[in-house]
Image (cartoon, rainbow, N blue to C red):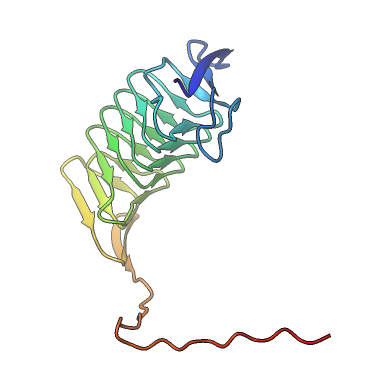
Length: 197
């Protein structure tokens, strides 16, 4: 069963693009009947998973949004770009050419292009923001607000956030917390009796 249909509602600037409408409850934010963003064809948004195109976002040409990925606002996926996993693209960000985004957040006016790969390492997800232009690989706990060239490969599998901003690298250390070992006896808390009336 299809989860959405393409409506007759045309994009005001690109009339060959049309809005989508949910035919079923797609996810918690998209109940049946919800009007979504714009597509070129049925191949731009997977019929499986909870992926969705929100607001005035566009997925066109050979671009694809699949799995649990979401695009919002005026963001755009085009060329043969793939946005998958739990990736989120919003504001005016663009994914184009043959890039592959499998996790993290792309926002502001950032552009992911060429054969760029954006992904996670374990549970660590990247954030690409500002006027960034990313053509290389960015994976893990990395915040990029700058340019990453096609020959660059950035991987950060740590709790500390690696920050690339204005051509400079810095680290934002994670807050260190200790957890008691399994053998440590846990104190039982007494339940308070409700006050008598």
